[in-house]
Image: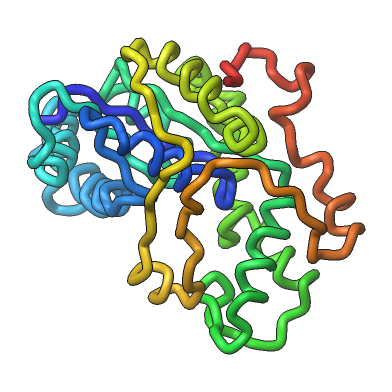
Length: 271
């Protein structure tokens, strides 16, 4: 049975895979770059609220069934273990998570939006013969069209994640959020993890930042972007020139709301 659980969410290409790779070095922690649990929750929850079977469930039974999904998926976690379940949509379900697991936190990885788009473009350029599921395997789109597609708040991989993060940031469950900056994580991983452990009230574990291992080749091949989630062995900051036009950076420069103290009225914790 899952007794200790936290959630990793936030924006794509912002360090969540690296964070999971580091956390899983701790033998008490279970983490991966993503899991199907959020999708299972999304499928089961509506069945208990409407249709012909909705009348058989009250809130207590709904909560029990939903927690049962976590318990079943993480049935191999030993007593005393801590689960970190990763999905971009968790920030859009902050109220539900607070009801299921009142002590849980939502760790949100963030990065300057222009660099997120640039990171995706860099990954595409490494494999020009592949077409990505991010863009419905369609060829011929310009970098501007791809950026617009990514930032669409209804269908875009970045836009959806950005929208639900903003929803949680300004919402009633904002105190559950822990914001982790990609740049801080790669520049000073030890200090970042020390602060994270402190917020989670966990004893610190000495991580090895020179020997990090994580890869999901089958998943990346499935979406047409080989190596997308492969983590470099050493955690360090590697400056590089962007591959997207500078006006794209300028266009989305105001999207980084977490950097503006005036837009943090609820005092969301930034690690």
